[in-house]
Image (cartoon, rainbow, N blue to C red; front, side, top):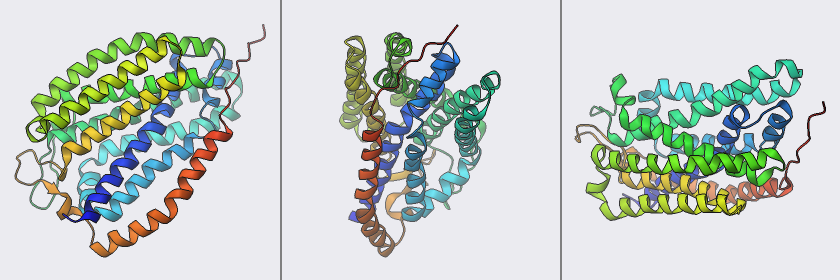
Amino acid sequence: MSALQLLWFVLIGVLFSGFFFLEGFDFGVGMSVQTLAHNEDEKDQIVSTIGPVWDGNEVWLLTAGGAMFASFPHWYASLFSGYYLILFIILFGLIIRGVSFEFRHRMPVEKKNIWNWTLSIGSFLVPFFFGILFISMIQGMPLDADGNMSATFGDYINLFSVVGGVALTLLCYLHGLNYIALKTTGPVRERAKNYAELLYWILYVGLVVFAVLMYFFTDFFDNNFFLTLGLLALIVILTVVANVSVYKKKELLAFLASGLTLVVLVVLLFSGLFPRVLISSDGLHDILIENASSTPYTLKIMSYLSLTLLPFVLAYTGWAYYVFRKRITHTPTEV
């Protein structure tokens, strides 16, 4: 395995980490529209917290997919063909939540509710099925010598993958609640704090179940026992930090801790995959980093382009969040 192959495997992990940190709270905010707000004014307030940034956050996913296509075409081909239906559902969720921002903004109040539901359902579908995808992938899928996947329903949907989907959805929802508490004033802010205080106790149970299932359904502990255990412990520590910060109303710390929890989860998955990109259920046809990558020349050109463009992308993202850093105020409904 060359240094460039390792670099691009890590960079794809970084892109997915950035996606779940930034888009994760978008999903949580989207789900909160129908679960946290009590009236249309509060729903508008919640949506306004992500209005200027949600589409920019999705670019991280597009970049991750593009980087995978260019740097690991064999990984891309096997993953996107084998998970075609799940990725279609994810794409459907992204589309319906994307159009809902525009349509709910242009609709009269009495017709907004359908687009509020569309936003919340789309925001639920994406993290849930991403959880299904990643967790089924680390369990091992039926692959042949050419990297073709011939999976059945049970390979995709099983106890561990469903738990993973629920856990990722809950993590995103809590990340969104922490973001709402950080970015709003009034009853919505207090309600987000109260919801988070309750849901963190449910998350603790979910993390224990997730860790136990990971022990029995993956080879992560066999291959990297201390690293896997350390990353799981770090997830729990960050969850405790976020939970305590919610109680103490340290909203920025709670938001950062919940976001970093998602980042460490991605690190856990990628470290367990290494040096593979796809795991075969029979252990005979794993797709390895060194066999799935593009030519050294392609990786070299991609590296130069990335190092040139990345500082501008990060600067623009930071500037956008700085410009829209103020809280969204609460406007009481007139009776």
